[in-house]
View 1 (cartoon, helix red, strand yellow):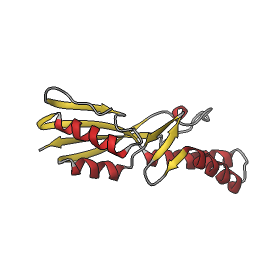
View 2 (cartoon, one colour):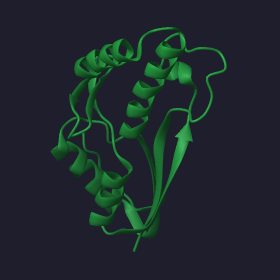
View 3 (cartoon, one colour):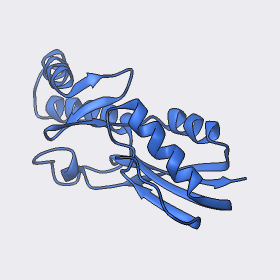
View 4 (cartoon, rainbow, N blue to C red):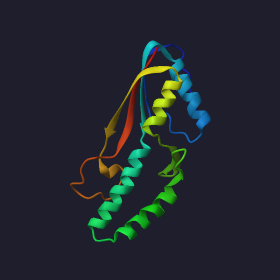
Length: 156
């Protein structure tokens, strides 16, 4: 649910706060977060990266091909998983576990933050272990790892 903080803060940390499938709910949450910041306050925002999901699908194809599966079959299997998991590629809505979850592209978050009047927007990857995305991930599977987006932005 959208939240409101009773007082203004210098720094607001929001981790996986904007994951609801409803665009209206996400917009209200972001508006309330920005309204909670003091002038020149900083928003630190972490969101799931849609690009990382696509990278994971590609990596699974590569793993399966390395294990001897024909490329066409590996792609067909991942496309089947994609159809099961991705509710809307345009909106970035994906079933993670059992819940529809909003995953974000870097540019859509930059735009949303800018639209809220935030400036000096920087983005970074927060990488995590492959086991978070791939069941029984092969030992030694290295970079680039799956990631979430970390944004830091300032209120004018």
